[in-house]
Image (tube, rainbow, N blue to C red; front, side, top):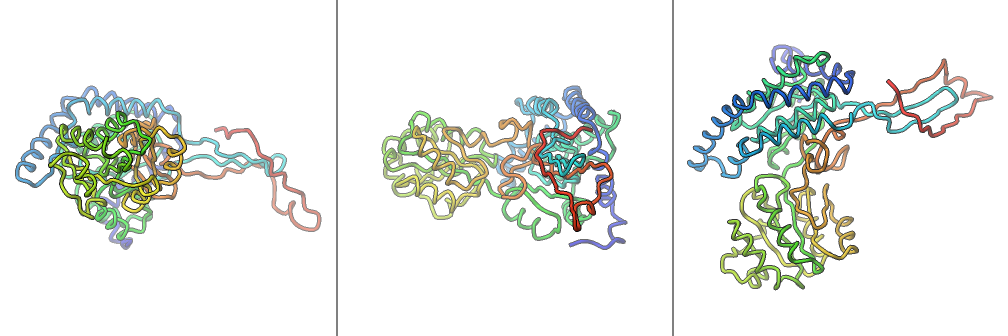
Amino acid sequence: MSGTSAQRADSDLRRQALAAREAARGLAATSAQVRDAGLAAIAAALASERDTILAANAEDFAEAQQMAARGALADPLVARLNLAKGKYDRAIEMVRSVEGAEDPLWQTQRATEIDAGLNLFRVSVPIGVLGVIFESRPDALIQIAAVCLKSGNAVLMKGGSEAARSNRALADLIRRATAAVDGLPAGWLSLLESREDVREMLEQDDAIDLIIPRGSNEFVAYIMANTNIPVTGHADGICHVYVDKAADLDKAVRVAVDSKVQDVSTCCTAETLLVHAAVAAAFLPRVVAALAAAKVEVRGDEATRSLAGSADVVPATEQDWSTEYLDYILSVKVVDSLSQAMTHINHYGSAHTDTIVTEDRTRAVRFLQGVDSSSALVNASTRFADGYRYGLGAEVGISTGRLHSRGPVGMEGLTTYKYLLEGDGHTVGDYEGATPKPYTHRKLEATWQT
């Protein structure tokens, strides 16, 4: 999918990608103190320019509400846009949390003495240049920028068009704030705004190291099919709550409702509730009533509809079990065993986040080991599957793949490693031939020092 050199040279995006590559090399060599100063500057600018950012966001939000009124945009997606009601303050708090986190770079992962005076260190380093495409959440731009800066990665970002004004204002603020910090290179953050920019970004395989898309299955499949750049991330978030036969039903109601309604527009929102047959008659009327009070439409299998005691339960179809609603809809199914629950999750789920409610530790462990998800939980809402809530500072996205990183991708997930070998005139010839010196290959407790 790579373009020719001539085509690349004529492009504004090409220049941004090359500037990001140069900036990434500079960022990798910065101290933790310099990167933290950049994060402090971002947090301070967000606080001082609150009115400007919220004014831009209010314009986006008002336009999105008009789109929703015309049926052109779903209400939960509109809610994502709004930075008011505490979301802006949480974003500032998140930047400060990233600033206060341990430096993820140049940490010694392994140290080995190859021979006396010849020491090998494996240390963490940035990936380099990231291309991140995210949904219509302007607070996601703040998270992504903060995590990339802390981990020493340059980034090209493309947000949803519904948040164009908010994203533009935020990217400008972040660039200005970090430009005032000595030691931080220019060009480490660029904001893309058109679909054509995305298409062209996918061709920059010599300048961009990793693409992280956040969106639908179709969108992620398109990204993967149209680039030679490695891609990580997730498509659908089809998450489950399983209420075991050994569940505390009070806990189960709380966990099931929070997993669905705390924020229906997120990828870690529960879309399917599985209930063990042994507790279904006692549990289903309670949880269906609680969900109805939260204006959730319940779609149930035949057993659910029979036991729920509510005429409002809609018949579920086969498609419901594999649907990410991102709305006030929940599919519910009665299962006969823990094994059946795990089989259902592994077949229909998206390897994102799934939780069991149970008081039986043995059954909980079976679930944690048997469910093939990037996050598996016990007696806790699926909504905890978030970089900030996990203590990662923030996240750039969720990965449901198996390579490099899984689950919420925070600072550590945006690092790789390199080997550093320090000797004193050592040559391989001394360890070969008729009388070779032996290698010691001794584990060292030492850490690499800058």
